[in-house]
Length: 119
Length: 290
Image: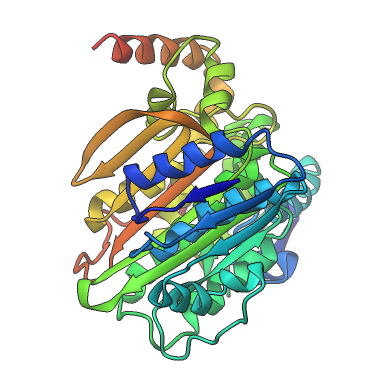
């Protein structure tokens, strides 16, 4: 049976405000250790009152640069998140997938902005 | 050297006034600089963030700053929001008042900034009655603005913030200013093409655009803010270099100022009577996230 650990964001950050990128990095470091060892993680957001995209990008979005989507899907679960926070996390995850998968987007964006400038 | 400060409002004209003052004082060193506020018969208090950035920048070059002829009603509000206590005046408590304190904090002071937001927005009973969800969205937005400044400004001068609420107008203004690299330079260097500062700001607030490189993705903070303001019926104004960008009623306005502001300003107006429930259109399942 696969091992599984629980990580409390509140415990790692030490505050109910999970807003800073460097706090997200602390969570990321623990997640990486577990995922490298093929260990499942239940990441709990209990007692976290405020989240930002900066925190979630560092804690979770960054994982997509290191692990396959399937690995993350298999090993990582979140709990104790309300629907607002889940929606924010979903946006962070979708953006991270694009960020790491689509290097051509930069060229497209340049094209878009030049078209805009010519309007 | 003496400068007159006119009426200061939370708008493009006053952002230009401050950009002009930055331009006029950028070469000053060891000077005695006086700001005469005789004609300042109105000062939108959240603009203390920008005024504070200007004065800090001037002091950084070892100039002496004096504020003179401050009208009594302006002195009162700028004392209650702690701004004038940075310039030799007494700190006056704002019991039951409507100010949100002026603060300067360093980029590594995120905990300090968090405490400031908690103290100013959460623990105060005199805050306008906002729905729990709106208050939460607002707090998140403020943190997104701060995080954006921390991640992109590379500033060593700190981040300046101040606010004010207007109970009868159901409005809350909050402004964050930094003296960092600025959105324009970041976007221009990233895109490697010649664009106007206003378009650089627009680019940074759209789609999945981000100038972030490296291991940690980015590119959401300003979009979340823009989405929230669109729903809330408020307004965002962003200044970077000589670019001015405004979003109100889902309409974007871009223009060019005469002089550049050496950093980024993000000013938000929140409609505190927003009846929007912020209920999501579809409930997400935890299993569908990754």
